[in-house]
Image (tube, rainbow, N blue to C red; front, side):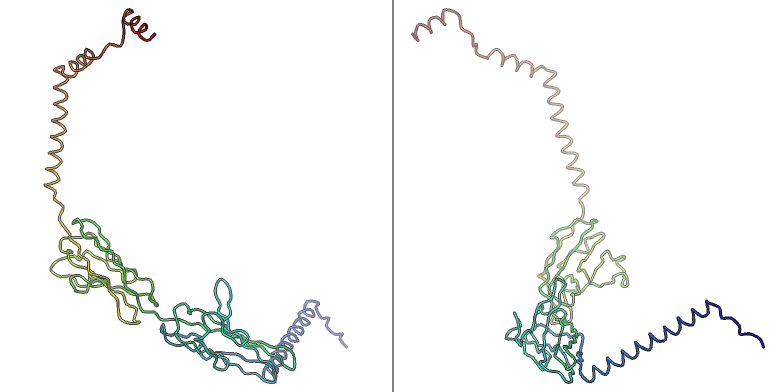
Length: 315
């Protein structure tokens, strides 16, 4: 009879590792089942019906927080606002805190918030804890609130005058609307196209570029045809669009002939002054003047007799 084949040490080690891994998986699965049973029998389950809430400014919003608790006592509900700088209380010890007082109320564990403002936007956390037969238990859920704000009156920057052939930028901006506003420019009451190159006509190339996100209107270059009355309109779909006051931009041609004539005149004046100075210097006018000034200078010396007379007079 043949003897048993010896088992390799490597195979034996691998078999042991597989058995231990299976045991770990089985224990984790049993722990998971136990937690589910505990949750159903004793624990707290907290969730929200709507994770992302959107509300118009000055209207109301519902921050949903629903809990299911079994075999619990002394249920404790807290709401907090989560910021990058830290966490602040909204509802604590059965009372609303700060500017939520008087305009918020509890619906079971949810919050009904009236007269919502833009400062209420952010992330909120609902935390519920209670004592169970197995000890203290707690659970939480988060809700984000976005507040829709109509645009404010935009501020427009339009130059009153410009020189033909230069690069000119018109700017329009408002910072209060949410979501961010989009911008539209008008000239003489007619809306300018966002993509003017798609509507080229007999007049040739269109020289402006409009950015509806930043509110800029760039003329590169500007021409006489761009003269007119401009205003900008800001809108984000929340409330009516707002527009800035009308401003006129006058575009004039560069007067090359006038500039050349002015340069020639100034050059002639400078040349004439230079020739006059040279002529006066060659004729000796400046030397004669210097000599006459030297002759007219009073003498500061006194003779000895005058000095003695003055001295005796003082004594």
